[in-house]
Every structure is written in C-alpha cells, then in structure tokens.
Image (cartoon, rainbow over all chains, first blue to last red; front, side, top):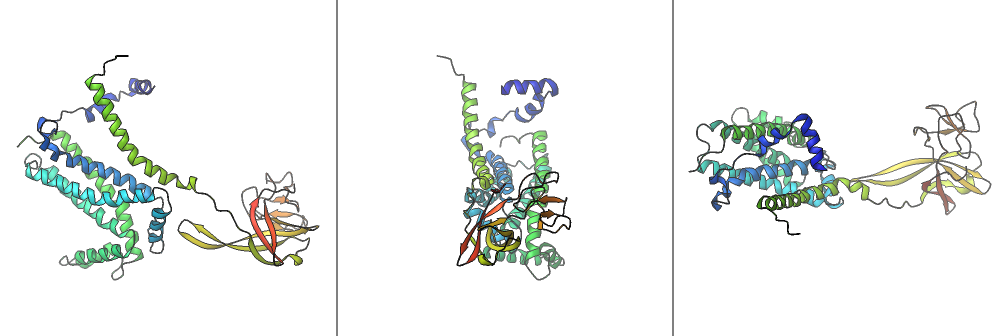
Length: 224
Length: 166
C-alpha cells in the first residue's frame, strides 16, 4: 500500500533522486564504529542534531501551556508539570536536553579540533560551527529565565551583569537584553521569550542548513 | 515457511524497529501532553447560592446574578453569570440568557412590539416566555435552562441543561 502510494508520487514528480542524494552516501571506514570502535567520537555531531530535534519538538509542545508573563509564567509551568498528563516528561525532555545538547556540541567541537577536521578546506564550516555554538549558548541562556523562579531570576541577573561588563557598550547591551535599564521583570521575560522561541531558532536553522550542506559538499575529513 | 531473511532485510527491520521505538518514545509523551484537554474530566458543578429569596420571585422574569469560582488551567477567577428567573405556578424556571442563534445575550421584553417575549438585539431573535424560539426568527432552538433549588429560602442555581418546557 505505502509502496504503491510512493510509486504513484514518484512516477509523477521523481522524488527518488532527492532523498537518495541525502541518504545514500558512503560512510568512510575511519568514521564507522563497526570497524574501529573508537570512531564513536564521530557520532557527537549527529547526537547534537538528534537532541536539537527533541528540543525543537518538546519546546513547541511546551508553548501550548506556557505564557511569558511575570504573573502567570511560574504558575503555567507549575500547571503543565503537575496537572497535565506527561507534562513532567515533556518539560523534563526540554530541561535535560538543554544541558545535554551543550555537552554533545562541546564533545563534537573537541572531536573536530583533535582530528584536525577544521583545517583547509573546511575552515568556513568551523566558523559556522562556532556561530552555532554561540546561538546554542544563547538559547540555553534565554531559556533559563523562562520558568521565572528564583534560580532563573538570579541566573539572569548574573548573566546580564556579565553582559554589562563589556567595555564601552556593556550598558547598552544589558538594557537591550533586559528591556529596561534597571528592572529585570515583565519586559525582560517577554524579550527573552521572543529571542528564545523566534530569533535564535531562526538563526539556528539557517546555520544548521549551511553546516550540513558544507559537510556534503566537502565530504568528511580524512583519517588521522 | 523457511523463507530466508537476508542480511539486508534483517538490518532494515532492526533499524526500522529501533527507529520506531525511539520515535515513539519522543512522540507519545508529547502527543499525550497536547491531547490532555480531551481527557480532562469536567468537574460536577455545585448548586450556587444567589441573593434572591424564592418568596420574592414573581411570574415576571428578572435577571438573577450568580457568581462562582472558575479554574481555567493556572488561572482561578470569580465569574458572574446570570439567568432569567420567574415562577410558573409553584415551579421556578431559570433560563439561560445565551441566544441559540449566535450566542448574544437576550433580555425580557426589551422589544416594544413584543412585550411578552425574550428579545435578542443582534438579529432580532425572539423567544416565548418558556424559552421556545419563535418560528421565522433566527434562533434554531429554545433557550437552555438551569437546574434550580432552594437553600435557607434563597434561590440556588445549578448545572445548565436543555430546555424541558418546550
């Protein structure tokens, strides 16, 4: 049945070459853990992507209940975690995934560094990767405030103080992030929400697309 | 039944099995999370006391406010609704003021040419005193009614139900 639907579509718009181009590519021996178990270090990039997908999905579902408002944010998180079925699981996925994605990304960076995969002609993809790292840390930072509990508030106070310590433009950066020169409150929360849910994910998608296209164009770096 | 499973098939099945298991592990909790409103039981509504004495109710419909605590997710608030209440013989009738056309609020005898009917100003809907919709006007059914009761001489109002007078 599924095969016939696929054939019907494929007869008309010839989709096979599209997915074959994505899916059919040789995995070199030196990155295949079946040949050399130590090659598992080459999995960290894929694991980062896998957890990113979980983050995107669980985040989409969390916004069904979450509100970025200082009166209701904490209560809505409490409600979705305590009163909604599987809420503790979905929030747990997003909470633990956030830490795990940073860890995986860091391990991926170490692998690229120590195998020398960033060297010519792949310098551009290293640059894109560093930008991805920054975007991901931005997502982690802005997401941390959203539950609007004491830990979130004080972590953000510290983060904004660090931003303020930038020479010359520090105060502007802090005000721009917080939405107010002195208060960390209603406007900070909505700003962080917008950045966390719209701006940084948009940047993340673009950079990930470039990252992956470059890998396919240039191939995986050779063995040590 | 000794069909040989090739190495390729075996790998395909294993990978699809593991893949489905992982996908299900992700999708099931999120799906249940999103579908939760469908599985929430609506709490049985209590009888709500009003400030109107049963003895004071006449055959003329009057609007009676009743206030109750509503829990909407994480938001708890006091909500005030009202009903059109009158006496029919010994029986007390409490009609919902929500028009069955598009949900506007109807009022008693507010149309000068229909002094003995409920009138909806949005599209000139009309209802008889017992809530029956007047043919030829927009509403497609009779007004709903509330369960009523008495507590210490005061009127109490309960769950909304379909009109039983028509």
